[in-house]
Image (cartoon, rainbow, N blue to C red; front, side, top):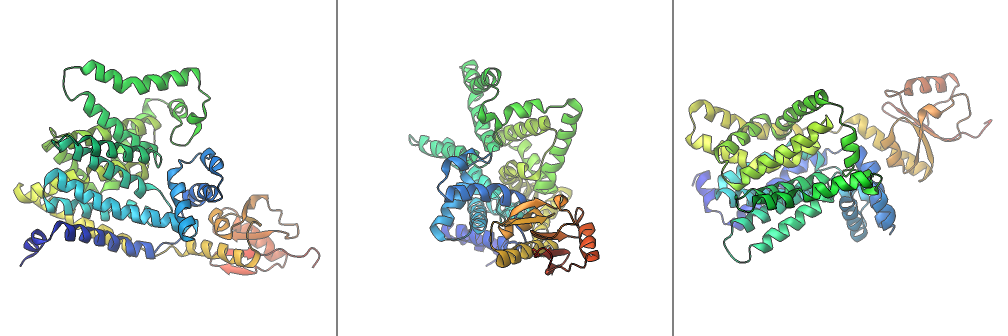
Length: 457
């Protein structure tokens, strides 16, 4: 029995379990090679989660970060006793796995073809940007999990001709709404569905357009009469800030070019190419229309900002993967020889990209920062001032950051000093210490640690 027959003979449950296992195996080496928490994880999500864990809900909600990811971190930590960093990493990893299963089911719903479904999963588990973020204390995979499953349920409801179709549509809408509490850009997917609803037929079009634009009218009125509302100051909701930062057409043009470049770079150049090809081929269906509207919204917003980032583009790129899988499958089955070659290269590039990420070893300099911070914690305990030029070292030391530039090298060392000689003025401080005859108490690669000295000793 060849591979095709084996795949076709598997039951849906076995196939879905295989997808879950593949996602776990794809993530495993990246998890093992994790080195240090991200800056956002250390100084945004962990502090917010710590407030939730302490029961200070108002304090946590007052922080600029959206609350759902930190709240889930705190909940998992409370239930399991795990530290907040590991809780955040586990939520990200599990979200990645669930998102892979959701993408498989979504593709199967759309195209009724197991091979297209499996190809879309291959695209997802080989995305280097998402792999790296799914083993860190970051929220991208959680957002994508909500996006995939929310859209899957909405499409399931739309495609079902039965009186209960409102149930999956409502559940999908709820999931997308929850996704906006992870990252505000999830609202773009809801907005795109509203646009699909508004323009679905000519009869009553103007009324539906007014309904579609009514939130914008309310927003404009709020900005006009209450520009200092707290909601406009929250991260991800700073509409006034967004508009005020618009600096002209040239930066906007630059931002639009960066957006297009990053869409291809984030999603795999050939894979995204086949996604656009398939969007053109099946443009009359609701799914590719929705994908197109989502991309246009992201394009307009990020162009207005004048800059972009792979983390913001991940969600629309993943949403396009079933289309890309359909495009690759269609070309392999029916396309001419040159296009078949490109399709095969697109498929081959996926395990290559995954392997490149899987074998990437932990950065020894980042590991040194982590180990230095942990050593300080064991020696001095938490809540000490740490004078340093490496912020994440302070996170692992559970201390209070004091910028290195504030250190007077001529005074006695009365606080913990941790100097990275390869970064921002660290070498000068280390040389001054050496001239004064002060040796470090511990060294981790380029990081020198000086514990407090007794004055005059």
